[in-house]
Length: 346
Image (tube, rainbow, N blue to C red; front, side, top):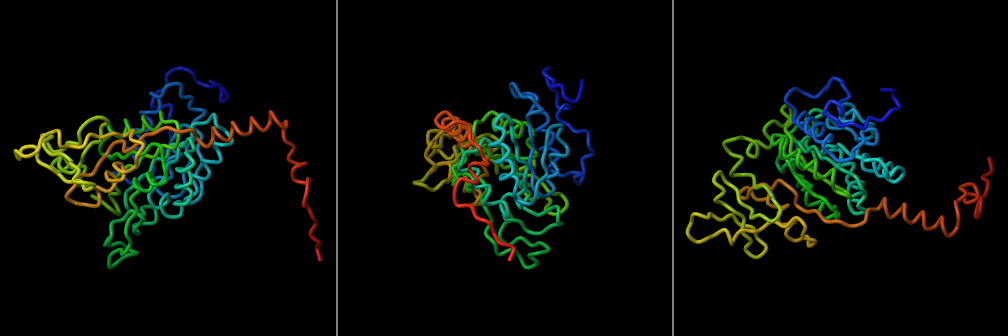
């Protein structure tokens, strides 16, 4: 096949691999995310890999575009959403993804992230959240827990961490989800759903950094503990968890509480039924803050999915309407139309 010929037959995961040596630390959770992306993309209907672009900033996760057999852009720190936004607006026919870490997206990149969310630009953002700066060898990040002891917080961090899901919801992202690196089937499902979403899709992935923050999500991933600490959000189903699915989440006013279905006082009818399509934010916000209380399980799955026109669609439509009224623009005429002046060398 020539370099300019576009493949139209069914893709495999190999088609989405660049063949480059992957240079993450052995055991890093990034491998799982890369594997699930490469396995999931071939299953997306009508995907053309020559029209897929991965954009990243700086960090371990931001090496992602090197390993994808697609176009890619390794940008500067925190700017991936801004670069991706420009790309999507200039080329609305492209499928644009962002690979980013907790330090990259939520620290220097925080401003770009919230505005990409509120504008509902048709981007897919995957946040690799290991709660640490891994590339620069273990400083606390915007998602590190309060009291975290690191090289830059030797007496414990005094910062309150960002809640990435709550931030995305508060910025009006239209698709907000979470998964785990150690749950490949669930992770693949979230990637698939993000790919199918029209609008800004945000997926937070809790992933292990076995060198600088090993075991950060151990309770959620180990066989002995995960059933009691993770609740899987499924649209239209009650929020049950535990090995025998005999515990659930009930709302006492606006306060979530855990109830035991074997206590003789509660039934399945007391349990919240998840509604990911609820346009109201209240229940999604409550779910996003379950992680604040160690007595409550951590939700994974889709917190919210709603639909509204995207920024890129609106911009293209507006340009077409103006062209119909005024004809094709002339940049030179526009620049020299009024209010121009020359600056003297003296």
